[in-house]
Length: 489
Image (cartoon, rainbow, N blue to C red; front, top):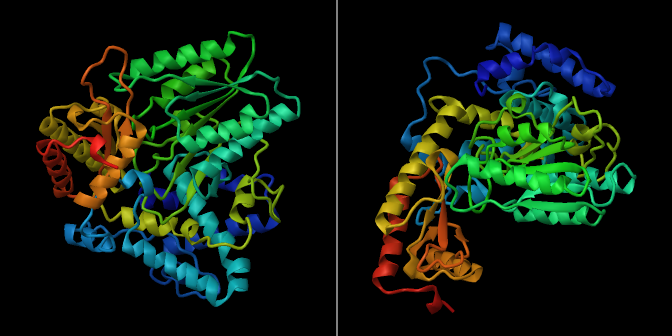
């Protein structure tokens, strides 16, 4: 799905020609892109749109790789990320992602294009550029139509859009007070706050799915999810929304979203929203297979975009959508995708470089699929190496992790609270130049000398085994010195 060839032909899908409820200027953009697509395919070398020499109408469609082009080399990869601090073992890609130099350069070109002539940029280039990015995303995630794809700042913004609509359901009398929203206990903190702000305040009842950690199997997740749905229906109320993480943040575990969405359909849950902040570029993302009503993923975490940009998928089959961007501007009422493409004067460059990101990705063997596979295999290998070195264990089976995995710390470090976890993280950064997030798991009743601290390690293409050896040796040194978190002020 991620190849340039597939993207090019996505412009010719039948859905591309069925443009209902679309403003006339949007229709013109589609028709123009279609026209230049045919022109570029028939004569790619002479087409000025593809090579960017047409200054009146410059687009940024991904270049089609030549069969003779070699894949990117290790030195080239290191050059693309030479702006990273070289002294830091950066094994926390999951928090902020990364962006290669070639994409940063493309972003700067967009920024200068705007600054040199803002009016021309706004009237002639911005909408076309955003549409091109949406077309790339539509193809990557196997959506039915580009109208299902909106580009927003981040997954938190996407969650606010969906949850705002739920709150209107309560205020407008479509939902009854006490109707439920089901979410995972390990949902991202900002999303939990959004549920509180939009659902609880509106009169909804929130049920959290209590997931075990460490987790041993997919079945454990499925069983707890079914229990939560039963609690939601026990009072005779309706479950209006299920919020399901595709990959939980802390602790990091891949959730069986396809199975949980199917259960929601069987149990009569109104709508399903999948929060996949760590989705695209990290795990398989296919809208038709997953079947959710809403799905969001950041593009700056595992898809190499500059911060910050995400997409929100809204299934067209869902006719009850009343979705609007929380920042209301001139495009209000023209559909979520159009509203989101203009929320006032700001820097839109991160949203415009998606085609250039795809060009970068396709320099790798296997494209995004190859990157995901290699990152997964590497993070499992590094996680097992650390667990063996410290005499601990992983937080989940390898098949339940993607490009991140949880590794237990030696119990003798004395991680006894959230504050200890944060102070140890700071200590590792300041003294050992290791950047890694740490999760605190309260001990269960009766547990003695149990593992209560876990590192969430990431693996991205710029990482090397030496990054993880450096982390291993730092913890081994602390253990040998008799260090405990109680020694940190």
